[in-house]
Length: 403
Image (tube, rainbow, N blue to C red):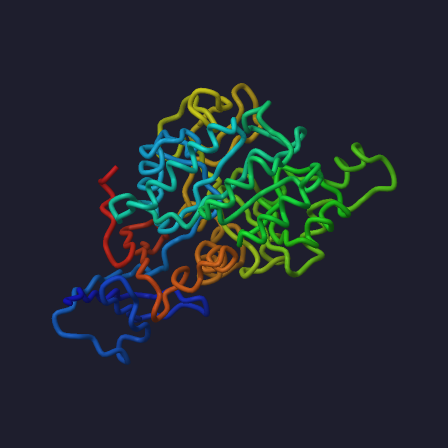
């Protein structure tokens, strides 16, 4: 069977560092060789794609994102999934984890149905490949719901999450650690092969320890909708207890993520997170709403009919009439540029946080997340100033004009 051969040439971004004058040799949908151009035998007739003064990067893996192009995954339609995934693909995301929020049980089932349908019939024209669903809402603490739809948060219910996890499409599962039933939810989600996380939570150290014992190893968007020593003291009185932040920083096995959009965190906070957890335990995520690539205006987080209104002010999502944050409006490539600007992490480490690290945490690193022999040819060409020029998924170019 004939297989197309493509050579990507430029400064190749590897987990170990930058490879100037490097090449990535692709046959069909797989990478067959990576190395200095002078050392890799290039077949005659191969298509050569030159990054010139830019970079050859692995595709980005976004494990926490809610939509784009005017759609939220919670809209529960195939159109919402495809448009969102296409918008993210043109910004360099090649593997995506459609993320739920608070909503009705029926809305959550519709969301899973839509994602599952698109994944079943997926091709590159559909945009970013679906790595799995991030079951994020609805198991939030009421006082930490934040900008998500209020009144739909609830305690984990086996009658709801049991069938959902049994479908096999959920690969990341979030629950506030202090909720009744949280320990059992985390145990079941871990047994189902999920990355088990804690988020939108006012949990104390002992409550975090209880879910840690059954497999919780990750915390969603560090510092956002998280407990603090002060919030826990207000909830549990004295003695003052450790919060989620202290728990994550104390345990080397714990990983977390940051929304590096320039509005959620000041530079010193991004630098602190990077220094404390390192590039192998810190992910970049977009936490992007439906407002990605849309004009300023009022939109909804969650379902288009029942979701919480928020304002896209052109720089970040905020609750209308306030400065309270309501998610990001930017994709992964923006997070990479901000992380480079605001921290002393090198480019290889920043790209690792956007690709290999999330792939490792979600069990996908065998065939994606880095430019290595045998892996899928998910390749992004970056300009010298780290803007996405072209996106290739499975060795096939995603046409950015397709929406």
